[in-house]
Length: 438
Image (cartoon, rainbow, N blue to C red):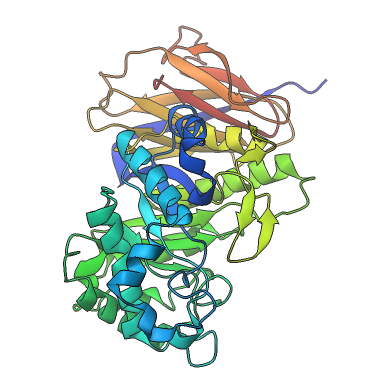
């Protein structure tokens, strides 16, 4: 039997990187059903650790005139009264009010196709003023009539792809759309900030047109992108650096959608593993937050299809956590909002480790992945000021057999020289967390 390898790693608390806003889920509020989903929202907050909720109320952006029969005449207060008081929107308001009760300000998003009369060819957005009026009516109702407490709104989704994900908008036109939206939102919605560009393909084609535009930079609250493939850390970091060197350099950068698009249902451990690997890339590159697609299996209106991307499997009135839920929990639950990433140096490429602490250096969370097919011993040391971190460390683990199981408690230091740091064993192909967070 091959002896286990001992791999050392070092955490330097004096070398800090980005602050973490938190993690969360994209969520379809049509399943709220007058509050029936409260226990599921509680599970996502209290057990998973989600704090970012990207809420899509309608599923398409044609709610004002779904079949296109009314035209611009639908943009009036009498019609708004009817639309925003219907069951679909009442469920959206209800879910978001409950999120407010739980101390969470939702990120309200719009996606999917727009009414045909807002386009030139059935897919390309051209009537910006009509689009801005519709979005203003929606957000204004949410804030002033429904009483939702929020500041972040995503008006557009994956415009680089176009329908069914959103209307088609070319990169050169994107800033013009945002200018019209910004102008309309100056009427009663001055405090609402946009999350942009929510692009499908990962490049700077769209973001470069907005981050240095002085007319709209002040309206941007968060820069956000989407990721469903293995984009290297270097590519992600270059994007972060581009934003940091712009007029929007002080804004948060999120991955507004990430995960994996397998629809077979036969690759659950793979999806859990690869989604976590991508999350590690996102964090190592300097992103401040990430939002998993999707909270639970559901019917996607803009795709007009049932999808199984959820962290939770949906049955008849039953929601069951999948393996990907427990993998996400290894990070979401223990890397809390306000934590900062600190330097982690590992002497082997068989293991991947990231580390996070709070401003007072009283909490510590080390997240990692054993990338190899063999069990390993890990021996970790802390450098820098960490006198406040005196608690015992809890050890949690997820692999094909375990689901974010607490497997023990560890000391920051031991007397077992030379293995006198945080010393523990990691099974093959496993995700682990060593943390002071309870």
